[in-house]
Length: 123
Image (cartoon, rainbow, N blue to C red; front, side, top):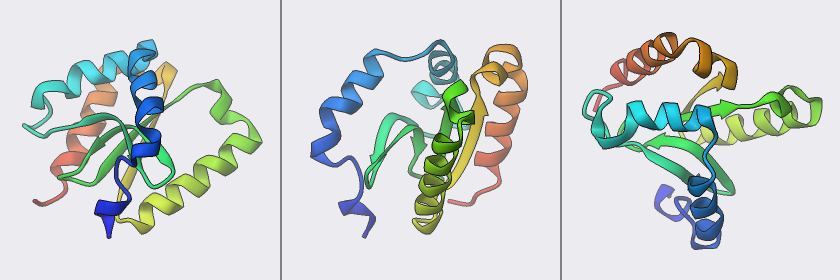
């Protein structure tokens, strides 16, 4: 079932555009995830599942990492995020969310959270 949900061709240009326009926080996260640096696991940037484009995704562990800016605190965006998380959880995907500030000011804590999350799942 999942194979038909992943990286839909219709989102390809948008995903490419998002990769080119990374935020500073996304860049910092990518620097710790790229090249299998996190427990030897492969992560993808701007990976789509269904209609949603995830900031980072590890298919092996079925973990999505989302980096949220200020607009995610707004009521409408919170509702969208809840809907997205529910959809992903129904696909057996765990979502880990960080605020931009967390990434910029507490990278060690962010790293530790991701490290523990990917280590707690079995292959």
